Picture 1: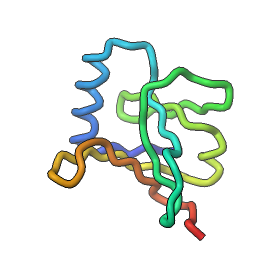
Picture 2: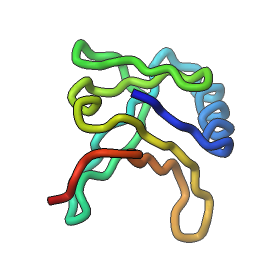
Picture 3: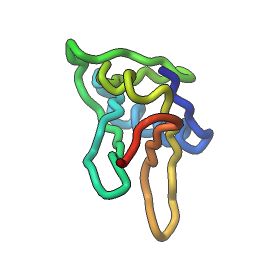
Picture 4: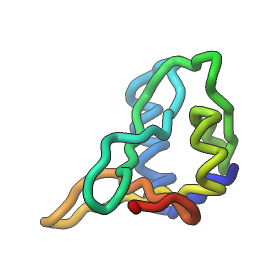
Length: 98
């Protein structure tokens, strides 16, 4: 499992983690399902038994092992425009809406 971060996402994650001062880790998760397939999110969370840990550019992420069977990698970006503000988590490969 690989997690790719844009420079903007790295900067935002660093700011958030420094301001929160927490022991929780970053979790990539399925946020819901729609006509286009699953959507993904990211949150601070505690590790669980079914999690795998993935390190990327100094950040450690939690991902359910079942997601690694379907997706090889994720890209995380940060958007700050009038249409959307926040992190955008997208699988790089795998998965299907049909």
